[in-house]
Length: 229
Image (cartoon, rainbow, N blue to C red; front, side):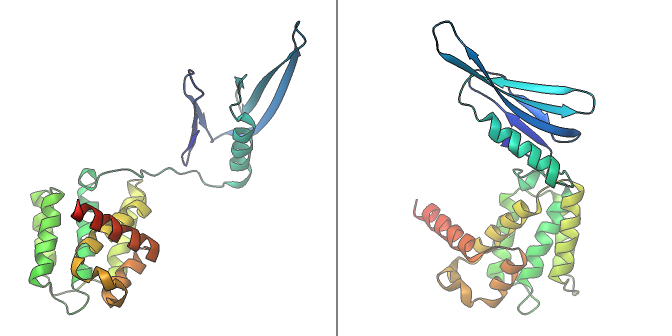
């Protein structure tokens, strides 16, 4: 079973995928049918009925597939969820809208300027390296160059809100993008990772991105493993 923000997908072995939209469900009912066979054994058949306004969907199984669990989840969604929404959780940054990519890097630039209003040479090197690795378009690179040299240092909360609005507009998970931002910023601070909690600006931006200490430690372990490998 797979549950997204708007739809459930279920598949029993050797059967086709069943697609179940949540929208329009009136009720979900589970039933266990029993049949006495000639040999004296009891044959069980599980069934859920999903009632929509214009149709009833019925799904059967004679195996141990947990249809009652599915029925409880679907009915719970119907009874307790007010808004149905699905966001893309797995998307590569370079495939996103240019406006999102620009704001992604504006967050990083705003972070790099936090301490003293400038970007140090080593920080600039890390920034350019990340842009190259993600194959940022020339148009976005040019916009970021102008932004980088601007004397107006944008507040991180302001640029994060702009990023969040763009992500919502394009139905992209803000959590996924924030985690990606956190990992990229952590990777820019390799020299201080042994004592990252002492880096005030790093702690500040990670808190803004809702990155927990456990996530930071996991990311550091991942970076070290890749470096050793």
